[in-house]
Length: 468
Image (tube, rainbow, N blue to C red; front, side):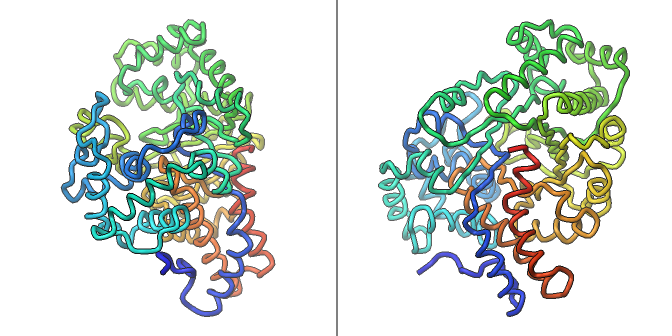
């Protein structure tokens, strides 16, 4: 029996459900554009088999292990690497059994849809996953992973991925991307410029990172002009490896438009380690404006992922490092925060700035009116905790009336979990079709227009927003 309902996420009423089905049929098999994510480029460079089911589904996916941790399962028991690179439980089958024992925790969550989609559509499993079937699941997936058809490049092709973007820090040598580029494989895997380690004075080792930045680029990064030139050189290097975007994960959406003299003075305080919290936030804000100016020169799309309180648990940060499920949404201002940047470049038609939020209260009040006015702005899709049917519907309902569809940037999956990519895009396609079907059924959108919009939301808008 199938793990998933073929009409999942469609409206329950007959007429809009029929319309949703018809819309979905036209977009279900369109190529996947995955313009922002965190998959490991080494997978595609080396094309080695994935080690085992646990390292494919559990240990790299903070959506999965954070839920188990919330119910008292330790990260060490799940094999999540510690900050020093060591691991606790090293037996992948034991980890898998813990995962199966706690799989009921995902009932009603988007993770349940993603996981069951992967189990059924990637690995051909059609019996429920639980403690009784855990070993059968493990053995089946392990046997599949030994086949050439389940190596990274083959899965990339079978998923129908047209382009996949990874995210690398400004100091990365991009050797895996170079290896992909120089191979005989035609899959398009590109990088994204993520300079947080050298633009955030509160990032651990910031001053040392800026010094390395200078050594890497041959610029004097002890000076403001040399520091900015280093960014320009690294952005060009990333573009040579396919980058079409930069990404900035700041606690706030604050931007600044300081004079050169004031920016230089603030930079000197930053590299001396003398910034207050307020000054560190101001420096990050100034760098968003500087990155936008650079985007006007080199064409990179600017992504602003604001509003996450990173590494909320200092204990987990110390024991297991960054990105371990303890990044928590926070209230975020966009209207006042973005004004300095938008005063500088907001009216530029050739600039693409994509805004993301973890604060849903700003959809209708702030983000939609901003994107509905400034030519440079686009709204990114629901992000992280809201990458779900409910999150997508809330986003469409609160932003469409003011910003329309064409001031949004399509969908991106933002994932480290490779096998969930087709599942996440399927949820997005179904959710958008359900929303469009309701508009058609209530006389707010013509049916022929809905088919065109469905195609654009699935494919065209992401390609255009990211210049792919």
